[in-house]
Amino acid sequence: MSTEIEQSIAYAALSKPAKRALAFITAAIERGGVGTAPVTSLAMMTALGISSTARIAAVNRELRGLGFVITTEGARRATVFALTEGWRNITDADEAKRLAAVARETQKRRQVRVGARVSGGNAARLRMAQSRSEQRQKELAERPDDDEPVQVRKITLPVLAWPTNPNAGL
Image 1 (tube, one colour):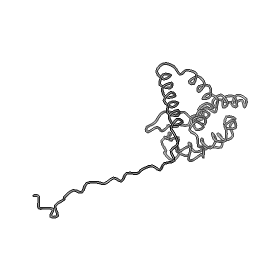
Image 2 (spheres, one colour):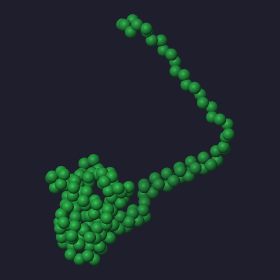
Image 3 (tube, rainbow, N blue to C red):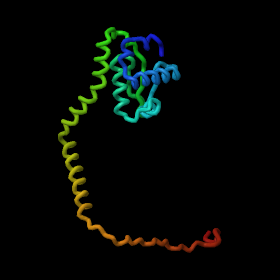
Image 4 (tube, rainbow, N blue to C red):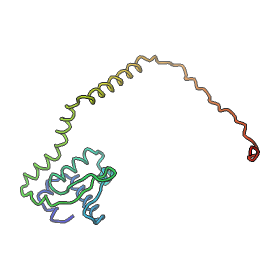
């Protein structure tokens, strides 16, 4: 990663995980030599020490929001990253902090919208799953506690008469 990027206002507004992710992505692109690099969430989680895919998504949004990378869907659930120079357009520290905060908060707003919008077939499936779960819990609660040992039945397989001479049946 160049020192020009590290000295930029946009880079200063990045969170620590986003800075580590940018270094990881830059190294992956340099290794590949083609200007792009497919990176899976699992690889990023392992390299950055982050245990949540939601946090990886927030880091990716932050890097895109500040103009460091563009992303596209790749093969096998990998995200293909390419470096951009959009970060050069950010000249104000307050603007950079605002963009980073907006990028991190975007998922929170989306989760609220999606959570409130459970309707149609999805709502019916959700209610059915909840009722089945509640019914199963009631059945387990009503089941008497037996102190009797569980009887185990030994399974025996029939003995087949195999010829002792393998060529006898031919």
